[in-house]
Amino acid sequence: MQDLESLGMKKGLLYETIITTHNGNGVPNAAPIGVICKNKNEIVLNLFEGTHTLENIKTNSQFVVNILKDPLVFVGCTTGDLSSDHFKKHCDAFYIKNTDAFFTASVTRTKEIEKEDNISKSKMTIIKASVNEVIIKKESVEPLNRAIFAIIESLVYLTRIKMVDENTAKEYLERIHEMSRTVNRVGSLDHKKAMQNILKYIENN
Amino acid sequence: MQDLESLGMKKGLLYETIITTHNGNGVPNAAPIGVICKNKNEIVLNLFEGTHTLENIKTNSQFVVNILKDPLVFVGCTTGDLSSDHFKKHCDAFYIKNTDAFFTASVTRTKEIEKEDNISKSKMTIIKASVNEVIIKKESVEPLNRAIFAIIESLVYLTRIKMVDENTAKEYLERIHEMSRTVNRVGSLDHKKAMQNILKYIENN
Image (tube, rainbow over all chains, first blue to last red; front, side, top):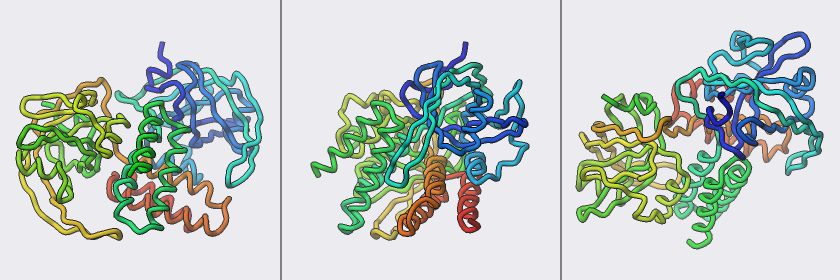
């Protein structure tokens, strides 16, 4: 049987996905959501209070996770411009028509928390869900994880940091630290180790 | 016969790769280099004067492009910490042992230019090369392109821009414009269109 491993998802990593849900009247919704792979049959999401995705998941206890890299779908979901012809029905649920793969999931536990960062304090709900059906639609599927990108960005800054004035160098260093926080949140042990090597190199040079 | 299409490389996109070369004494070198796919049998690179990669390519007229995502290899190449046991021989050339795929390439044309950006003026050499042998070592290979990540980063800033003070919002907007420049340099038409949709949304909201 196919599971998250079949999709290339690895335990502990956070992937950028599009989650599709529908409300009580069957109106579909799509939103870009980070999905943490807990093991090959279980995921966790942190959802902000007041979003359609959370409301719909509370109503149905079920949702669909789409694995894709179409930039127009990611942007369309965020700006609210995704037209209804992007959705396709699968049993009672909806998925994104041109997705590389998708899976259906059922909520097993929810927990409300307050999250505070440097911008604001927000109510969030942590959703734990089990994976049901996994459907692969394209030959080669790779879920989207931001860690390697954050490392490449950091390397670009690293190679330039000696060529710029002091203020710009400080800014680059701040960006590298920001990328490091991203890697710690979404990456694997190897990603975290690579990021530590970058920080060590900066300290010694 | 396998070509760049077999590796999932698309015409016009720039991919983050590791290029392996060797000097006149057979000492191998590895460096992270952006490779532009011109068509399924041809690539272009822009190399800075004074790098080992350029010197070695001038000596041998041949090089190897490694398609991989190992963060420790990317960092090790940049910081100069990649140990010699990472290299493996293939005929006269070297590739990275744990690479997902690699191909050998022969220089067909070179052109020296001066490049000026907001940081500095540098001498560069544009290398045009034809693809020889393509070797795929892992079941699923996807070359690393930064465009979708730049779009995801922009969307993260976009969703926060209304929640922060004016100065931070300006900074976020500058980052989105920086990401837009990356997308224009490395991405596909769809990536560029998606980025334009983000900029249009910001203008109208």
